Length: 446
Image (cartoon, rainbow, N blue to C red; front, side, top):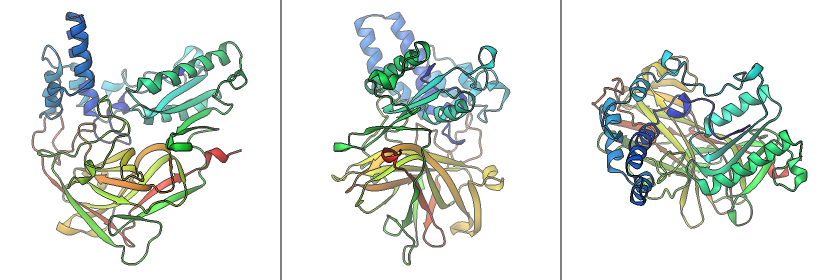
């Protein structure tokens, strides 16, 4: 059974690991289904179809207005054609823990543990993309399916959600190979196809000749790690291989959710005009974005798996976000995003037994606690080549991909007040903020 989406709905509407609401996904989907498609049904002409494509693929003032509107409970009425609230949206934004009664009959679209005839999970092949919004949950689905069905396969390509040009050939090939193998008993590897014998087939971006990428076959995902490649944040906005004297320091910035919320450029977005790998250089010039960059690599570095960021921070807000983004700086100076992730901080998370958000000591500037954050900033397969640099972006927003943090305790559906957050990143010997990359060697695995 080829699987092109995730088995659960709720995790798709929030950033992974209990992050912010994926507001662009929610409102853009409503705009597509309850506005553009209804218009197309009324005016099913060439002009109507052209207008549909324009409003889907390019800037829409109606959608942009909704994405920045407060209170949030009024935003759905802006994007729907009849300007009326949508019950699903209204109830969803009031039930964002995932365990509420509202999600009981809506969350699980498929249960790999036995939501099939006679409780048997059939052979499954999950197809995902490194820049697809389904990716994180699909990898969780893969782990679940592997426990129930030995014939579980995974293919991860170099595409975003709307990237039909790359997506369609991969999904078509996978479906044909799977049906040939299961229904006809053919071995795809002996049929001249490129799938190979191992069950996990992943595209390693920037690998191979001319950095065009290369397919790798491995036994499982994540693949075996050779070592953890650690880079320490240091003075001068540098990523260092080791900790030494004189690298201690701080970097501060102000996050302004109301007047200038930090956007997201590219990535695993539902916006077809702003998804996938995108140049980051202009974005990195913002005052509310801090970047740390390594020296140029002397040898290639293959990275595959989940990327981890350990960050020591101070904020004057107990409700705030921290976003990390892994990038590659090419020899011509262009910075390209690879993957990202975020952590949403709240008083409950700070005071609870959450090992990923820990108070580590005394008060910082202004009397705020110093926090140690352990943030998963995405998952990828990428080869950094000699002459290229590894770059880390740190900021406090990715609006409207993930809903901006208002900086208050008000419920998001009714909140209108927003407060600026003064953020400080600490690094050095005492506060060892660091980037941890899973170093792999997939092309030399026997």
